[in-house]
Image (spheres, rainbow over the protein chains, first blue to last red):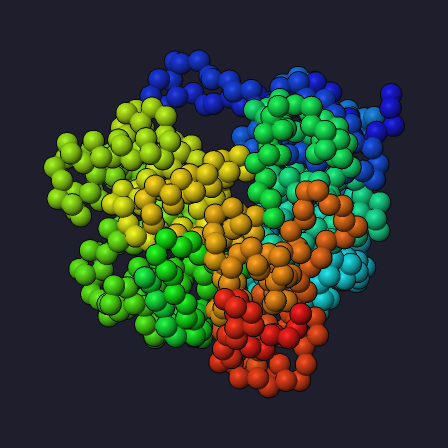
Amino acid sequence: MSNSILCVKDVCVDYTSNNSFLFPWERNKIFRAVENISFEIFEGETLGIVGETGSGKSTIAKAIINILKISSGKILFKNNEISNLDEKSMRKYRKEIQMIFQDPLASLNPRMNVGEIISEPLITHYPNLDFKEVKNQVKDIMESVGLLPNQINRYPHEFSGGQCQRIGIARSLILKPKFIICDEPVSSLDVSIQAQVINLLKELQEKFKLTYLFITHDLNIAKHMSDNIMVLNLGKVMEINNSYEVFNNPKNDYTKKLISSIPKI
Amino acid sequence: MLDIKNLYISFKTPEGIVKAVNNVSFNLPKNESLAIVGESGSGKTQLAYSILGLLDKNAEVKGQINYQNKNILSLNENELNKIRSKKISIIFQDPMTSLNPYMKIKKQLNEIIINHNGFTNDQATNESLRILDAVKIQDSKKTINSYPHELSGGMRQRVMIGMSIICKPEIIIADEPTTSLDVTVQSQIMDLFNDIKKEFNSSIILITHNMGIVQNICSQLMVMYGGKIMELGDTNKIFKKPLHPYTKGLLDTVPKIDEDYKKLKTIKGNPINMINPPTGCIFRTRCSNPTNECKQGTTHNALIERESHHWVDQCCVNCI
């Protein structure tokens, strides 16, 4: 076995549509969202996943954190199989695998203040920590993502989009995970704020030795963030290679088409 | 052709008065294409809406929008409807929500021609089919009889574009037409815009925050921040040599595919709150070296023509 942090082997994910309301006797329709996908990520590296809408990028992310069940294949995290684990046994891995979501405001509970949002994973996983310790850790992490510790009692609507995304990043970092899945973390932010968040993610990667799975449809950002890039189309891997090779020497026709459609400045 | 003079737009909200557009003046000559760029909250969309009289009820507008010797702001709803689609048309940002989900594409397209040109239903359908072909929808006969949810995002945006050119308007306003689309679809839509420009001789106002698509389509560029024009001029000139720190920042923040970076350049700080904008120069909270003069300067600073046909905001004229 290799010493990769995450190893995905021949994974397929199917979506089954519910029984039709009008014709309940009809068979369930099965839609294969991703097909035979394999890749490995090593510690401290970033794998970028690029592809168009419906190519299965988010499906892979959901399969890794076990929100979706996979229909075949294996997902290994540090050589332990985590695919299709039940909630209880998955819990110890949840500390190490965290996720940053696309829409910064929608992924924060509007009725909780920043302190509650960021400390929730900590309290869930370490219920015995005392209040002071939790507060200190929250303040530390807020500082490292560029939020002011005195904003701890504010609510999400008082922040701008970029700051909300920082809160989301703080929440994913509070458990000191090794592996973070970023599902289009900057696509709903303004260009000037995008660059700030991208720089923050890179800084944090160096500081905490993080491994990223970085999902995006913006090829410029994918190239800037990733060591390796996987190009997906309609649930199949088109190309997987280091990012220099993908952009300067694309082997696959679809990759070539994607790269040629980037507007040049 | 379109001449905007000293336009102010503000909104009364429970939190206070939002000054969305402050003292904006520019004109759009015939067959020109103008791009408006800026972050969210810079007033681009409200500016576009004001041209068609689409602002919300709590809006207060001052200034002039002159089109064919008429001030659009003084027209009533009936007179506005004669201009909308026929003379000036708009493509909205989100193709998913700007089509009526209960109506077939046919009816939505026909409605416009029947109202404006008095066509019969059959004539209108023929015209609609022709326009769907013009926006390169394959199998237009099938598409015209479908509902919006049966089409993909790119197709819906094509239908929206078709809708906007169906009466051959003189001005097309496109409000972030590709923001919700994939890159490959985006480049197809951009090609389509270039074709339309040639074929229909329309002027285009393209609102976007994507610097890449600006250069492919528009010859003029206007950069907005905090409801004001920061820089205005020829697109190629501005791209080559931006004179305003904000424009330079916007161009620098986009990572380019053929360069390697250790760290991306950023514009520091966050977009301003439009209820309490900073005193003095509006950009000073994000400027890298604001001086005391910037703090004291009037908020009504004007544009200065620093090079021929290249205007910059007064306060920042010597920043770069």
